[in-house]
Length: 535
Image (tube, rainbow, N blue to C red):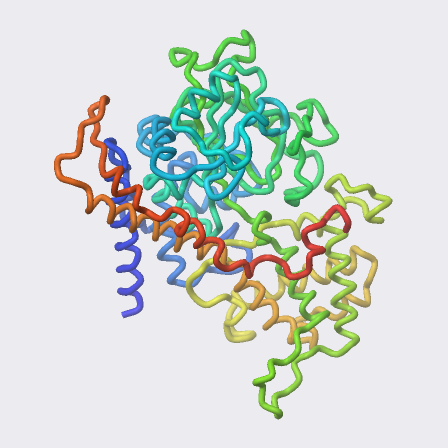
């Protein structure tokens, strides 16, 4: 009966998404085919297998996200490319047109209260090649006019709209599949740039992995692996906040591994922390790229799959759990007098605090922090700590591996051995072998760590779960809005059908957006985690 319930929920979500997409655009959004029999593996099959419930959901989502994967199987993409290697895919212009049209921006601005640099759907106008500086002519809090695309292009500026997934039903439906497959909070931003820019964005890196979907025009990309350290921390990412980098800076980035011009329907996967730069002019001539489409503005969606941004890496999972061992909360007043003490002994609290400090220092050892400050050189363990938590641990459904019967299930053993191995390696690399000796399977320290670690892991799943709830709510409201639409909707100039603008306007976008902000339990409790430059 539980399996039937799960299948019913998946079918209902797909039906709502399909109805909402049909109401938004004349061109129907291609809804995914039934789940294939292909097994969807966990991240590189390294740590644990997913629960059956999560596996069913991920398998269905796998088929939906295939346009992003360059013809690879989901298993191959996860093992060979996810977070480690870029990938160029060409699923076709028709797929991209069904997902998004540039004219949708005007419709969104008419339907809902979009604002510059404020609120949900944050809009911003960037000065090209400036390191993402906002043009001050568009003031914080001002309403986004319906003709913003034309105005920004005329001023030779790039228009950016965040959280497109809570305004466009087709984008919302696709984003839901991405969240369900990667078990991660995902958001979609729109970038619209004028043609002919020799530098649209200077080299920079993101603290999350990104799929770029070219919807209109063209954009030239160069993607560079980082010169030091896999992945990065959000506040230490380079090329942002006005920092303009050179693509020839070998101290930061290697030579490009991909140089390609994206045209409508192309998809580029850029792993977390890989440097990338863009242009809308031809490299040789300086003219607008795109051949027959030369002169068209570039419109692209960036589908960002977040880990570091929402503190979902090994560093935060282990570090925050150790934090709680070091400074445990008091027993609740409702606990019976005979309840056994839950606080670890003072010696273990001190050891946990010292290990937290070591984890932080190792995590920043390769990321541009002065060696004299950290006292450490390049850190293999630092790379492992910055790695995203694998999908198997982040799945919102099913039993987390940590709660499986101790010693009887290989998934539980893999999980525990990996976590303890990271702690031992961190202590040894930091020159503290006595700390390393505490963390062995079956040790008193490990026994106290498991329930705390499980609670932190539960909190790390919150953003992804709330994102699914938010998208389901928006898709349900959009489908309901179509039901309110009057019969005989008006034909549009391009032969399509406009459905229910007045009804769609009744959707409380503020309430929809606030769903993902309802629970901030995933945020670290110690504010020091927000200041890695001080580690």
